[in-house]
Image (cartoon, rainbow, N blue to C red; front, side, top):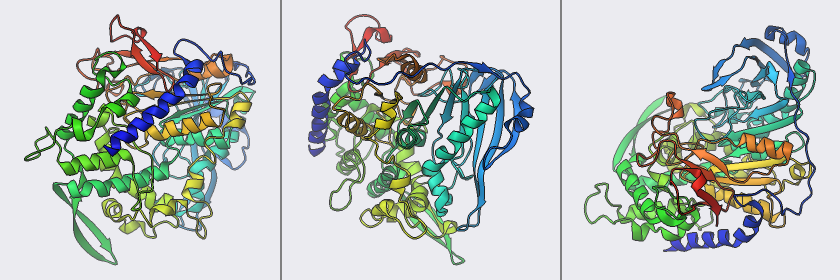
Length: 599
């Protein structure tokens, strides 16, 4: 009952804000009633590069602290599953050094792709996870299975490793500078370099600059909106984990919640001081079986499906669902063995605790709550179980990141580190505060170098006419949708209750972490952002599509979790928060045009 009261309170908060938001960002119109008179930014103008890509190291001359390691021509063809025109691919690195702390070499690695026919725009592709690898510089436009990219639209696109070369391990966190590069400094170093490089190639700097990413990339986006507002005209922030160290701590707290429920065991082998030991540990993935999570999903769907005006196997009104659904009342309680049709009382308690948000022993919140959503039954790599069990016990994810990147001082010895024991032994009272600590060589805390300095104060971005669009899946199991709503509410409060002249948030109902789930997760938010920045056309609703079986011959573009009861290509409008896509009362429920953004 406590959980249900909490969600009722959240729903009341949402409803209290509706009159303000609806007057400014309804589904059918733009920003007509905004009282803020912001500068208008001119549209970018195209240019071309007709030379030989292989000559670019000579053309570029000397860029400060930068080495160009290769420059090649990429013929017209498929890049990141999207047809893309001929372009140059330039690879390089900045600020090469050897760490005085761990003795390892470091640099900020990057690639930048430069279209022969350029649209005059620059896109910084902020990557995810703990970075450490240079992803293909294509430029994501939002969601999953994208049909276009920034590169295919004609942007010059940069991707980087954020200052370290270790994608699968977090041990770079031993080096103080690598921490800062990962948190914010790589963007600060690469941005002016990339603009100078572009100017050398095309004869002019970018007319307009954009930065976008999802997950940690969304965090990079909010950090850039705060720290580098003078460098970017448009920010696209997906699932912005701007409190990433707090989210990681919450994951470790979650492991401790699941452990007593585990029905299986695993063996962990550790070596210390030349002695190998075997430890028997709970297999937290057995705390909830796939059948149990699927059952909970079906109960949420049964209780909440019709709250948006139509029963269509989709929970469109996630806020209303929090008031309607109760684990205690709506999920059967097991009277015998666990068989997938019920939860034990202990499981119900844990599920409620996890959704209420991590807390220390005195009840102080360590991270935000999570909304109950039908996507809890997802079996994908971006779904609930994958993040709550697998990533929460992996050296390369939350345990390792907390131990070596976010804790100050970091753990001393990577060679003996194992993820599950660290998670089980993490002390939320004494260890969690270390994400706010400084010590010796580590002069900035994790919450200083990872989080935006003041996420509610984007006045510098606003006042120069720049814009920000955020999106977030309501079934995201790692970065809470509620946390993003809290950020957006604080942004509104800092702007007299209305940030719609420069900022919009688009919930994606049912979407998991950045993509996937029971969702219409194929959408393009980059075009609306460009139109807003360069034409003053404030976005209203944005049409999103499902990626069901048969919608593409390319496996990566198909979402296997689209329900069989949906049309494979079902469409819905993504609505600016806090409005919801509601059925108009007639026409096919598979078509976005028959829904409108309303309270």
